[in-house]
Image (cartoon, rainbow, N blue to C red):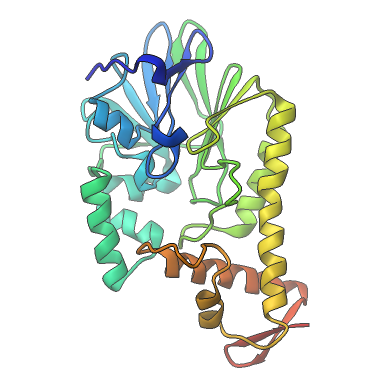
Length: 301
């Protein structure tokens, strides 16, 4: 399972390389991280591109999933002989397809359609042998190369970033204009915002996102992109409040769309819009910014 990545392998330090996915790692592709020490080599988030190429540029002793989402686990089956690690909170999504579907919270036709996508396009392979880690766990690869887990929940319960010397892997804190994704049953808006505040303190020479941005050089650029990414949450919230100038139901908010553009058609879009709207409305109610005008209909105060 050794593959030649050529110019698509970008070496950041003596021990860390980015395996750059198609379209800068745009979904469904992603940017995987290969970390080599004197004793072991680990692959973080083996993407569909890793599967398509048939492996990584070096033998892999262990795979680390930053969290339990389909695009970050595509190569788990390809490296069946390697140890597998994921935060303990996301173990169910790695262990079985039923566990993964529970992470998303899909049911009915949407679940059936997306489950087939996960199996066919993302090569999902159950790994009940996966080992769970917690915040601060250190993978010592030998020769001074260490991978330290940093728990950054919100995207999923177990979503984690990783410190590797001068490199910080952000995973799906991807700093895109789309903004934070917290639309699954196992997502949490408040946790995501706390994680964005926490990760802002990370000081590295290189920051790597799984999607789109790829490699970001320097803390100044990182902080600027992070602040813009965080601001999307506020813009969504303000847009929803404006929509609730007149009473509306959650179903009407879903139909209006605040997360995805109207032309986007994917099995999980309605579920994501509903879950996101519910979390924002719950925040409005807690803060006194909205009230339940009548059962199931909400209005901004």
